[in-house]
Length: 207
Image (cartoon, rainbow, N blue to C red):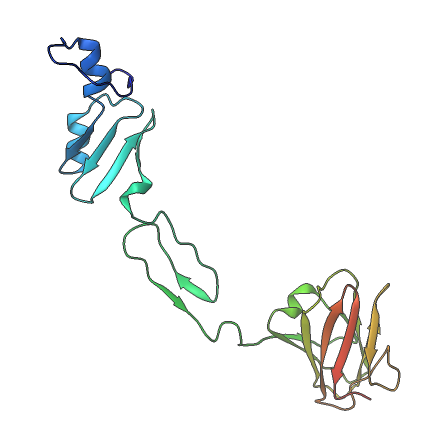
């Protein structure tokens, strides 16, 4: 099939040439029962050629290397989802579901040493616990958390847990030492909230 020549109005009595037939009249959309029937009938497709398959109501065009489904079919090309949404697909009927618990269920980061520096993952629906017979120091590091992120922490050991500022970090709280508050007792808890770049406020059962 020759390359399309565009649109032409034929006049009465005009003789059609082979070039006219190939360039104008063969630029329509061929209809086939299926892609298998299309492939059997068109063994040497040309770039820009269109075909319609009745079994899937699909409109296809040849890009010079392969038949490609045209967006004109009305079918989706893909639905990609991330947690807490599940499902998705690339064609046909696509189902998605929302897991209401995914964003609220806590996981745990149990720390048993006497020192710990918070990490980015601690801000992802997680409860950090500290447990040691001796005092525990939790350091809030710089350049890890963004404004609005928060970390939940509970002391479950006998040793009291205190907070320390990393280099360039500012902590505010109602603790006796505002920049280095201490959890009041065993099982006391607090939330560390990033309010601005490297600025945190700690609220909870503090001393």
